Length: 482
Image (cartoon, rainbow, N blue to C red):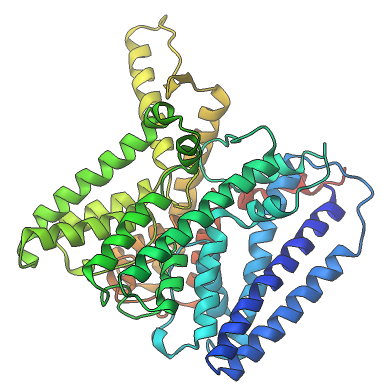
C-alpha cells in the first residue's frame, strides 16, 4: 500500500470540498444568516487545513494499483462525509453529530434519507449545502477530481480510481484517456443540470427551489427543501422532474454516443430497453391499481409515473404519500428499489445491466443442463461478456445479500415493524431515501437508535460504492506496505 499517495489524494479531495463550501457561505450571507455563514466558513477553514496537512508528505513512489484505487475511494467518501457534516454540527441546527453524519452521508451517497423533522426551519445556506452534496456525489467525487486534475502520466491512478468509483458491472472509457473520459462525463452532467434549471424556471419555480431541486434530481438524491417534498409544485414542474429523473438514470455513455451521432449503436443498448420496459410496465400497473385514489385515470398515471420513476431512479422525491397505496403498488415500488437504475448513471440499486446479465447467465446454464456440450457465450449488446465480468457480478450479488441480511438483523433491534425494517434497509442500501412505515415519504429516520443510524450510514456508503471498496477496508492484506 502506497500510504503517502493515498494521503496525498485524500488531501486534494478535502481541498476541493473546502472550495465547494464557499458558495454555501455566500448563500447564507445573501439571506442574512450570520450564524450559518460562520459555521460554514469555520468548516471550510478546518477542511482546507486538514487537506493541506495531508498534502505535506510528498510521495516518492508513484506506483498506484487497484488496491490503492479501492482504498482511496472508500476512505474519500468517509472523509468527505465526516468533514461535510461539520456545518450542521457547528451551527447546532442539527445538535447530535451522528444525525449530522447521517444527513451528510445520505447527501453525498445521493440517498436522500433524512432525520430532519422540520426542513423549512433550516437556514438557506445549509439547505443549499445539503442539496449540493447530492450533485457532487451523483457523478462521483473522484471522477470530478480526475476531470480537473489528472495524475501523472503512466501512474495508472486515473483508471483505477474511475473503475473503483463508477457504478455498474464494468467501466468503459469513452475515449482512450481516462482524464478525458471524466471531463466528458462531467460536461454532459453539467449541461443536463443547467437544462433542467431552465425548464423549471420557465414553469415559475423560485430560483432557490430551482437550484436545490435540480441538484436533487441530477444526483438522483431526493433531498427537498419542503416537508411535502415536491407535492406543492405544479403538475408541469412535477412532470419536468419526472423526465429529468429518468434522463439522469440512463447510462451517460449513451449520451456520448448520441452527441457523436452514433444513434444506431445507442439504440441497440439492451439495458436501456429493459430499463424503460420495467419502468413503463410498473407505471401502468400502479396507475390501474391506484385508480380509485384519484379523480381521473390521468391523475393516477401522473402520480404513478412520478413515484415509479422516483423509486427506480433511486431519487426519492414524492408527490403523494405512497405509504397509503395498496399493497400491490407498494410491492412494485419495493422491487423497483432493488432493481435500480442503469449502470454508468447517477442512480443506485443493483443496476438493470446486472439483472439482465444474471437472467442471461441463468438461461445459459439451463440450456447447458439439457445440452452439456453446448458452448455459447453470453452476449450483451452483441458483444461477448467476459468471465471476469460475470464472476464480478456473482461476487457482488453474494455480498449484496450478505450485507442485507446482517443489516436487517441489526435494524430489527429497534422493533419498528417488518415493513419499516425491510424497506429502510433496502432504501438505504440502494440509495433511495424514503421507505415504508415510519420512514415513508412523509416520515423520516429520526426515531431510529444511534446504532441503527450507523448501520444505515454504512449501508448508504456500501450501496453507493458498489459494496466491494468498503468491504476491502477490512481485508488485512490490503494494508501491507509495497
